[in-house]
Length: 254
Ligand SMILES: C[S@@+](CC[C@H](N)C(=O)[O-])C[C@H]1O[C@@H](n2cnc3c(N)ncnc32)[C@H](O)[C@@H]1O
Image (cartoon, rainbow, N blue to C red; front, side, top):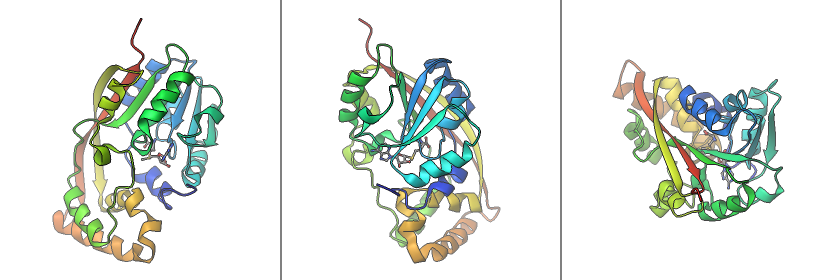
């Protein structure tokens, strides 16, 4: 698992939308100013970097060296993030933490096993937080067009084994039947503007259409994507409002 995202990290950092200030502030309020928070599947620090301003310490953990390298560079000067190579199967090797957040990463894991282990590792009052698209993700306006281009290039296999898409089981349902069954969901609107280069960069941030996955078809892919996008809308600019969910899961009181 050295480079799971196949060279996607710089594109991820630049073109994947962040979760927006409101979602980060919600997480910060939940964890508190002294909280030590594990950001599991941290990628290039999408959650870790803005969260670190308002909590005690963030342990930013990811199996992908490219993601960690990009995150470390972006966070230069942020003193309270520890970047650690690890994954959901090696939680016991990590320093102690008081809460955990997973941003768009829970679906990569054996979710039930992770929650059972977290029940042993998190202190009383420890929170499991998810941040990302909610139950009804908003499809980007270019997505049907880009899906066709990815299919043309055979770059559209969803690779997460325990995903909602693969198992049909939504994370809410997995959490609701776990030790962390007290759930509180909050939705935030996040307005975004994308141009053609940003939409192409976004495609290269996905594990299934990463630069490594496309190999020597990278340039033809970019060309085909550009042509299809300008045929979709010659202005080459799209605005849309994404919906971000912050899901807070606690052990039930008593
Ligand atoms: C889509 S990115 C999410 C990045 C960031 N947290 C965010 O909110 O955008 C998913 C990340 O999960 C990581 N990942 C994949 N399998 C994992 C596992 N078993 N344990 C921990 N992280 C994993 C990947 O390397 C990738 O960086």
